[in-house]
Length: 472
Image (cartoon, rainbow, N blue to C red; front, top):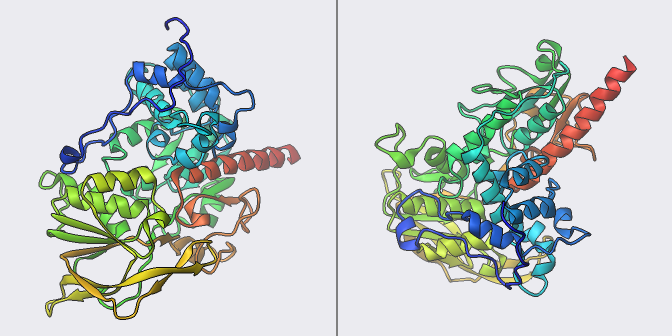
């Protein structure tokens, strides 16, 4: 720790080093390279340490932002991590994929006239520093021997598990895949979120006493009733995500080389197709690829396809750039890397040959009309404006919904018609002793919102189990 630094009144953030676009577009290494200690300390001194802490109010997991940043400015990175991790079980993940510009940084006083403090960048530095430098294992608190089951090891499940473990509960996470991490492992590309880093943060949860069982499809291996009645779990949290892909229901979607973004990214990320032939899972995309959709998943799929060797990669989106739901940073990175944006374009048919393989896509040009229920201007087709693009592969990235397995095997679990689990203000479901949160409730959303739900559910479960045992 050095001397206290003078406030940094620069109107802009300390620049984050990045791989040059012409280099990174052909590799799966991280795009953003992270702050050095000096950079992190310099950016930390831009924080005004506001007494009313507006940034904290914008964080779904209530990170004690001014406190941990103050310790970074002093050079006390270990204490900064302790403060940060007291409310955030996955800080290295959040520092990379959380949309800070719409949450904590959107409330930053420095952002009123200039650029907000780079909260996410500092968070990433602190978490990375800890993973690289911490030597001692975490010590779990005394166990109260009250068993809680977590269905799904994505951000909601891991957050709920970590918070309950810190309170002394005997927590077991059940994961359907062969590797824990959920969407953090299968949905987000290596160049945005390294898988080894995800596993490092999961290991820290294991040190707190969280048990993780993979290849466990709840609803098949155990029903929710069996977990409670036969396996002795007193409470269950469902954080099983939204893994059922949506399609457009247009002609040609059953052709060979039409992927859902979910399948495509799972093959690339979790099954490491990008490492072929070293890895065991190849994936063929050809040289011309179109991704349909405009969200973060669409950007991830397009940029992954390019790194797998495609010469031309298109983003096809029916609204204009202003309405793109993806993070601005992801859109800018995609543009820098040469992704071709076909905006105000809507697919009407996927074209194929007699052998059943994709040969192209037919789109119609759109214009924006009056606002719809979401507040965005409704895209309207322009008659006679159809055009074709020659393609080898089409990837559909227009959303996901929850898998129906749990609702089909749990008659007393109330769900919406579109698949989301119905919960009350505490995230309790219609089934006694069962809570749910994250994408399984809301449909596809952000990592940090899922984490916020996991945190809220953990507090609700703790209150429920304490009351239950007081009654006994």
